[in-house]
Image (cartoon, rainbow, N blue to C red; front, side, top):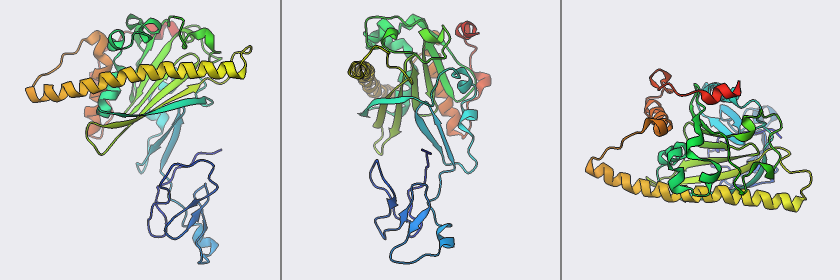
Length: 326
């Protein structure tokens, strides 16, 4: 079906139409006066008043101006003349043309409430330098020294692990069918992208997992949703449905464990930064490892001023992985 996005405002008196998440709805009904809307946003009825059809056609729910999808995530843009998502992401969608990201199969999710600012969560995602210290299981599958830039122009931070190392874990490549159009390099690589500001995307040859962060009313506390999505046709021909389900559950547990370890690191970092701020202590970047954090922080600084990243001041990065792809 088609995706719609509307402002949660009744066209009668401005009451909230929806107050909870629901599935399987046939219509949207405002609880204040029972004005009813179809799922396409058009006004259905205004009981007990009889509203002429020509007026109903003018009183549908107001649409959010910009709506796009990417990697199983719905993106909304409230700007009056929104920039299309593809243009906002620059060359990223071209980099991923052999990945069928429009037909991913939802496998599972986990919700988090993290004692850390959303910006620290994003910085942690692009910080591959911490893998050996924080992620002992992941470090056997995705080694620090196998990380390389995969960065172009656009509102994202991108890098890869190549090659991936089968280590007897749930993410091993032989456990699932891969995206069918991948070239030999992509078929042995993990891709990581922070979509500015708050979406983190990990793309394995057989699956994708995303992290969406949402600031709360409490400073330093963030809600996060982790979702696992499988490549279309990921189930091996000889696997039963039960075997495939078990493999997906183990893969979800693998990525959840990684994220649980990250939460501990993020909350520790948040507390340390409070102390660093109070003592006037400043950190030090290591260019080989910290260039993704540097790029993200510059996105924040430019974004505060309503601008996109100034690519002209970004460092020139190694493009060895790009050359492999050619």
